Image (cartoon, rainbow, N blue to C red):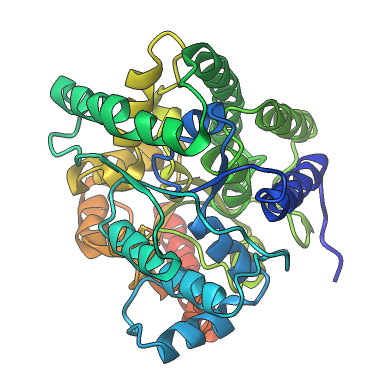
Length: 423
Ligand code: SF4
């Protein structure tokens, strides 16, 4: 079936394809590659050394959307990785064992550096331990990012991260790339990041309108792609977000709803906030369960997993290392539970949501821990009932379509009854 594609989607598809092509050619062309993770990534810093980033989570997500992940996960389990392990990790290990062809079918280069910016989730450290034992003698740089235990970034935490950037990360990047650190180049890239962030925030905030011109969870999953992955700090990302903004402006002018893979959504009936990552293996089917019922997601925590620019943060060329530190410290999964509940509560109020839903992914501790507690607290604070469903990131065995559809429909019916009773 044909999927409706806007200019921004085509741009993004091209960006991703070009990047994987560049990775395939990297070693032949004398380029070095750095494996690193999404939350709190140091993309501008990596690229300022002319290094190319590889993001294993993005490989796993893309493999999930392309229906390759089930086979990779089965391979990893055959090698002894338990059913409870994060399925991104198993998907990545299985892909490696089966020839390390990236999601576009082209070979991925071996890492020249494993850059562990350890933000929010202990699994990342274990993941790179596995990769280091698979790839042998690869240099490792580690950036330890402390949790925001007080609900704010303390000066000593920022200094601690900056000190590691100076003494650990930058020297390793210089060593691997053979290039000296160029602060002017980094500043120029951060300037581009801030421009892209301005447009992304504008797009996400457009969901405050009625009807919302975007879906901030399913559509939002696409919108955060370039900025949370390999493209932040590039003019390609600036162009992508400018194109996206133009599309959303046109939809607002036409009082139109979001574009879904099945076409434009009309008749917004329910406005929801969603907590937790999406399922990628049945992404379109999952989205359809919402848009067919007239349910649009107006805000989500997942679109903050790689940073909270929606709360005012911008990469700042005037304070390059400090702003990289703040970026890492500010990712959603680096926040404590009280901060997460506060954020979701503010979304429910600011975006005039009718309800909220938690998609719990058991194998992702970073998100799933405390979600039932969050559900109860949000119900008490907002007076709205919440819904709780379970699925997985990229393991197709854990997407039970009938069960999930049933839950969503019952929940929306309950919202109907409440609004009927209140009328
Ligand atoms: S457990 Fe969750 S946050 Fe951690 S690596 Fe896996 S998907 Fe990412």
